[in-house]
Length: 146
Image (cartoon, rainbow, N blue to C red):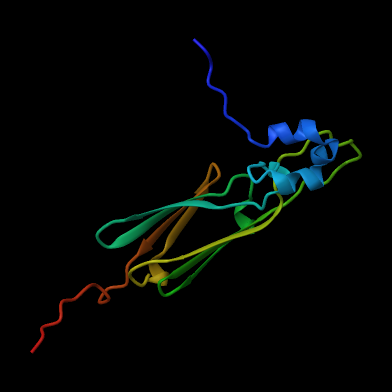
């Protein structure tokens, strides 16, 4: 049985011209190129669940101390930001780095306003858990048409 191989239409171009193997020029002809993670911006991945009277948010923020995580609540809008800090180099020569550094922000809006006085947040094993209670009195309401 033969193994399945993904066809790359641009692989033939590399044999035509060595200029295309240059990383800067070759990228123009290959839209499927995958960038190295070190050039990527740090990301915050989230899961949002809705219960009867609250929202539950889990945000993956690995490798960040809790002091470098900030959560802002403005009515229905939630904003999570974190600073991914690079460790100080103590004279060693870096052979490979795949980790991203910088600031990441994730913002989203919910259907109902959040009672910011009752929010609970915990951070453990690289996961930020937020419990966002809905504000009372802002639920859905059917309007009678007269």
